[in-house]
Image (cartoon, rainbow, N blue to C red; front, side, top):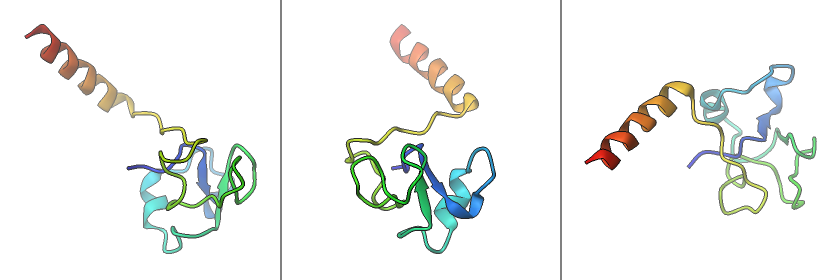
Length: 85
């Protein structure tokens, strides 16, 4: 399960897009220093803390991160293959 697309680690401040790999590897991933891009604060729209551990699909404000183009193409080919059978 991946964290919400609006979750950013404050250490990447100034970078246009935070890669998920470094976000997962950061030693303090289970508590702030993270920010929700929706609110611009260390808490989300539901007033709960914005952390890698809490910003999951069970949360009402969660949005899944986009699928990288390479994977999207692979998945599209797989779906076509399965549905044509």
